[in-house]
Image (cartoon, rainbow, N blue to C red):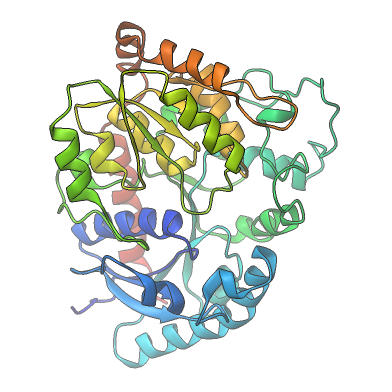
Length: 418
């Protein structure tokens, strides 16, 4: 596929939850006449269960851990440090190779958590857009931490004010902000991306901006922001692009799950799924399981997501509250029971309940575990159909403004001459 100068290089972060949104955005850009190449790290490419095919071209990039990926590194922070050193060299080689083949890249779209990709982009005198795969609210909290507006030490009963949100307590904050979570040292790594974002030509947010109006408006004062609406498969949005959903790093059980769901009554299944890197304690898993066994409802506990969520048998979703899962669920209109673990998930869970009113979160004890009794109470509440059916109609909006934003982005790519 010749680029005719309309070539965009994508550089996603190494996990499935970051690669798939950029892959969906890539398909949107291809439908507008651009050529897209995605740089996938070598280890991930080796372990993909579903191959990315079609017009999205794939190049391999090294993160310095080609055999074992993140598990080969001693920590996530170490992996990010290696990715910066080795990935920078690898990206330079990709850009040089594309130029020598007569398909020069004009624009680099990089995951915001890889700020070094923008440094490489500017060395080649190209345009660069940061691609953000969390909520605008999450961004605003970390931005304010980096700039000293929001502190990272809080008392247990402190009320915290954040633009666009109801009052928060420490349990609602991103885990590393409040020095919670399995690796508090990651706060520095999470703040690192903001070191050069002001140099990006665009900052692309994977959001429905109606959900975060105040924060989106505030963010535009700092960066050149573009809302591109959730980058979930077109099949579940406008049905204008192919139904190739993305890729999986794990063996898919979609067919068997759908076959089982087809045998169940509508709105009678509780779906449970936590992402592959969520750190869910064994005690919490047991409490959820014991709570579910209290009911006559069917439940399904498996990783396959979009096809299951959209099935008419599914009534509610017990989720870790990762941003991709939240957007997919809001789009489909399924109420949620939140079991957030770390990073942005506690804040997302607060928004689901207090701001968007499409779910609830069981209370936790002093060990941060939601007990069986609390979960049972939440299941009873969320299986009441009338309440949630009325709320989901007003949760999100879909429409032409997002297409106009993407058209503007495409026009900038086509106008640019390196």
